[in-house]
Amino acid sequence: MRIRRIRRITFYFSYFVIVGLLIFTILEVAASVILRKRVENSLSIFNGIHQSGRNVLEIKPYCDMRWQQTEFSVSVRTNSRGYREDFEFEDGRVDVAFMGDSFTFGHGVDVLNRYSNVAARQHPNLTIVSLAYNNGFQPEHYEYFLDRHPDLRPKVLFAGLYLGNDLDDDVIETLIERDKYGKIAKLELPYKDVYQGVLINRSNYRYEWLSKLVKVTSLGKVVAARINSSHKWRRIFVREQKLTNEGNRVSTEFGDLDQINLRAIRSLMNIAEMSEMRGGELHVLLIPQNFLVGYVQNPHVAPDNKYRLDEIRVKFVLMKAVLKLCQNNGLKCHDLSRILTTDDYFESDAHWNEKGHEKVGRYTSEIIARTLVEN
Image (cartoon, rainbow, N blue to C red; front, side, top):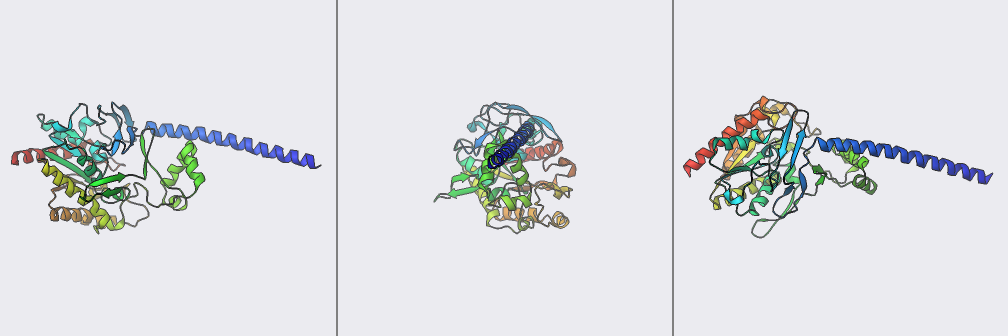
């Protein structure tokens, strides 16, 4: 009787183990298919984060891929140094440089329609380049990049400052250490990782089993993506609440700028000083969030925060606060909300479409012409 019971227990145990493994295998295969599809439709150009000691992000050289999302399908090509340019260039021969994040990289538009290229067509005698994404995606990254590229001495240097996260979220997720001279000696991005060429979020999970599941299985990575996209699930499973792309804090949206926000301004001031010492001039392009020019929804507005969007939109409080800071600190800042309208953005995306890039390209072209004449 006892032997029969042991056999029955062994049988059921084996049965559930086999069924469990079968279910897990099916889920793992399905998850791998989902990940493959996501990678196929994502910007998979990254080799690593802060690997060279010069560039903040290392981009694949000679990349040639199709980047496809709901609202666009564009070709992404990089040269031998990983820059999204259809020509080679040396740092010392650059006349005009654009530093920035996804806007400067040309999110969703062909490189020929990107605003730096629009400006370049107006000045065919100048070497005009975009340094994104090699230069990272917020002012401290640009400062680090520029300091480590001493031969880069453009006569005109543009730095994009997207008000949706460059003053707040991207600063919080960046760890830096400055030396006794005030230069950035160390820069880390602990909340970022690269998976099959795609830049992804990296979280510190509360449970070791979940961390291992995410690290070694496709199913875990799909589960992690679901957790990272939900504020509710983050609170349950993530040890540190700080994650990438959370959106600005309410205080930032209403122009109450603190030491975190001022880190970005300090870096812009350092970049301006470096640029001047190298014989150039910095111009900061203040990029408005799309709800400021007509949209009510914006992916960089944190859903847990109770934003009074109408009040923000009417008063432009964050833009005004940043413009005042620029004026007080001698920075040449340009409010792009003065030239952009609702239809300059993708319908469900925070970025400019071709029309928006055309407007900003022509605007920056005028700055280039005016600056070179004055100097």
